[in-house]
Image (tube, rainbow, N blue to C red; front, side):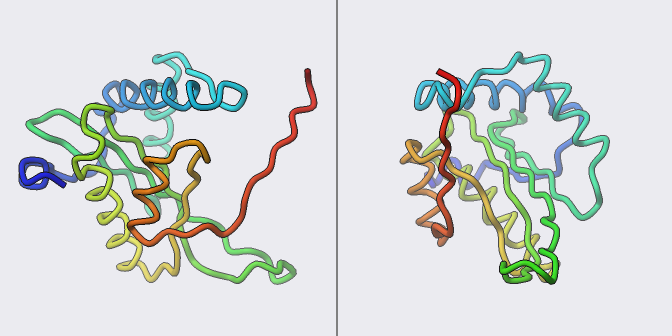
Length: 167
């Protein structure tokens, strides 16, 4: 993280008023992912993304986390963490309390510590609640994001394999 970014970034709770700016960041991230793998990703309409984030915030469960990173009053990143249900007693998966993370950082602010600050805030939140794990999905061709998560101690547990059946 650059000194300027680390000293000016403020992590705070997301509000419904942030939905438009979050949608800006998310749509730009969708463009990036669609360029990496157009068979898997698309660019949703901005209005649909605003509606999605506002709806998620309105329906938010108090056990979930919704944060933004703000610099000079402008939202430059966001993170959501949703509690994962424990696997049933009949599952081979270990019963670990955890949350699934979604994160997006404005393309102009990537590599400046915003993602790291958001992830550290999520980790502190999870530890305070006695969670055992945090989990996230990362697109395989998204090397920059993978390197961030690996640097922060996240490791591969499984691969998701997809076989398109059309075309």
